[in-house]
Image (cartoon, rainbow, N blue to C red; front, side, top):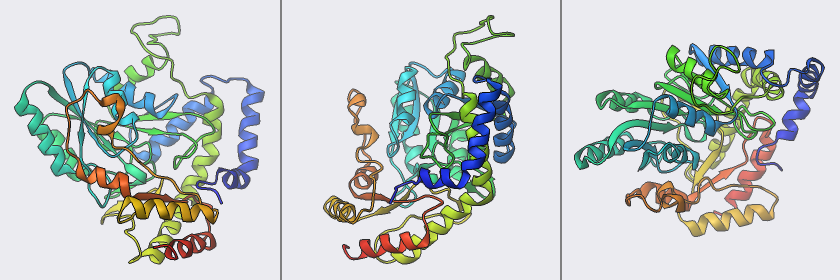
Length: 372
């Protein structure tokens, strides 16, 4: 059994993916081939924004937006404490200070009440200038943008949606990667929409930001390749990855997103009342990058993980260590994030992908029930 079965996906899409790769080989336009612009147009239309700018990976996508916003030393950027390292890493990389904020125990996403408290505390302290919020769509569920966007407007903060795991999710009929002043996603292979290597994208309605991003992803180019008008980076989605993503994106829209939601429903139905299952609030849609349950204690979680492993069932812990406890952030002022601390000790992610099948879910749930 695979945690996220990319082999099954390839088997289902083999003829389309192989043909797409072969076309790139025949054309030999390996960098900035036609497939890249085609994919950008398809993604922008799906999300519902004016611009999609692809790049080398999801981390670069975040960094490039912060560069465009001129985030730097003396700036405070608010980041959920329960997330992957990149969400805070990019802030520190620009010289700004990440301020870690606790999350909601049910959705795992940024807690708006705690966010406002953190903003007010930074303003009162007067050492840093509150500049932006990075809201993460963890495990495929969009953050509570109803409230987060209002807080950002109230305090004049830029809002960056980190949709690395959230592509395909929704809130009130609006698709993930369309919230805030800009948003990003990742095409890492295990993501809801993944390529066969690294890749990422930025979404925005801001024409000026879009032009800047298209420039800096190619060394800050101006009107042509060798006219460099600013300092940039080298972060392009290569043509092979774009070509692979096109048939995968069609499958994602046609049936994969529905399939992961069916799998999530199978899990939730069987595990209701057994363990704490993921919460999808009213009006929200999830793309299920992970299906994450919450146990009562670290001891129970670790024992269950070991027992499932003995039966050939892979599981993962996302995430075992809070952002505020990362060694790289040891010099930052201490913060209190008790919900994150508890989640890091108690969460466990079960196999989840569009090709899982109800029989496998039944097997997993029966094995889990026997241990809890």
